[in-house]
Length: 203
Image: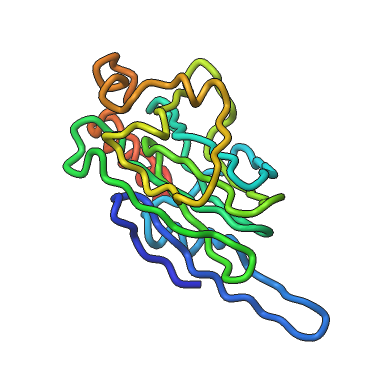
């Protein structure tokens, strides 16, 4: 398992190593030690989510207020998705930065994003299955979204897909509007949270 940081600081892609024979295939899709070595604190598991999406289903850009925020570890065991990470931390030197990774069942990878980052994905195949581990449970009053079609963000969505979005994601504010409304986590809040998690991890 190899891990490297993406263009958005605090987000990582993990190249997984499948092992197979005539019986099938085995993959270690999550290793706490590998992740914690890279981040300094790893992932506190609070909830595990699973979605199945038709081709063109687009989910996000979603984020949670910090603290505590919601870190995510995303894996696609079947099908294919384009996974997108956005730096929405107000005051971040890389505010608005974007990176995208294809996750599929043939060349297994995973994406980790720290608390305070925005997350979205689009399914590139019917019945794409996405499993993600999260560091905090569902809390509707603390979870928000950015419109994934915000032209100023210019997310790298494919041009050969007909998108289907929820009403909530369609009506979500742009990144600029969310910033004006004070909805976004700040870099100071996120840095304080990361420091707190590192201190807890060292105990």
